Length: 280
Ligand code: NDP
Image (cartoon, rainbow, N blue to C red; front, side, top):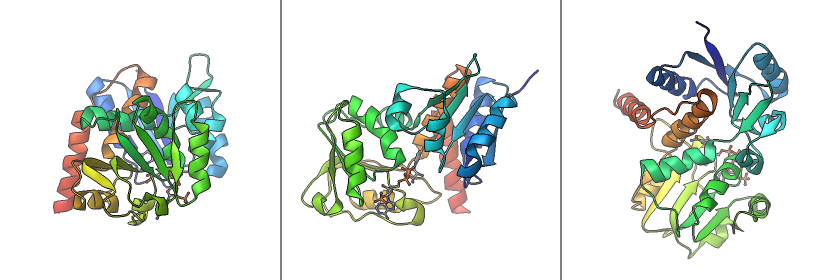
């Protein structure tokens, strides 16, 4: 029987958990598919992607630094990918045209609301950072009708640009870190890449309301600096992005295969493996 080919392109890519996640999804749902990681620099992305699809590839995930290039590459875009100006999932359709989607935002939303029961309606939400990931998560967060959504970034113009791009969906405020003093939020989402280098954005004390939660899009074998900050500030939940990673992968899997995998056994397994690694 023919095996369908999928891949994840990025640079670096060796650390990616996506091949493992999709293998677990395929086993769970009985899908005959292969999913391989491939180191692809931005310069060769278009040529490598065209070859992948010409050779019969069915679908691709794209990660750093390729999401904007994938957005440009796609023949058609879903509405959420158009809004995000970034694509993490490419899909070869029946007529061979390439559809671009962005599943990062729905991945975060599912992890926050379904897996952890965090209420977003009427919540005051702060997003740290104004990069590609923030563009992907703003639309689904606005759909949940928070009472306030604020983006803080070192480079304030990037935060303003996102706020302006999404005005048709809802009000987003932009500010810089100095303006966070004396403000409080129910949910603080770290969408900076600071955790990847062990850093923490400059956050004032008392930024988190009592009973509030923290979510770091980044994930690592140990608690990230921001997850540690959340725990120190008595967050009800202080989570990293492993659950989001599995949830965004499940959305891509559904787009490709038309079958929705169960995410909770995969998240539990990856968390158990992580805990085991940390004790060894
Ligand atoms: P980008 O490079 O597009 O943006 C990075 C952002 O981080 C910028 O706003 C930058 O600010 C800010 N930043 C970097 N270092 C610091 C610092 N020390 N202090 C304050 N701000 C800082 O990255 P992405 O948006 O693509 O990714 C952001 C994070 O989200 C990464 O950690 C990535 O791994 C994670 N991610 C996780 C996913 C998941 O499934 N769990 C999915 C997608 C992303 P400035 O503009 O001022 O330079």
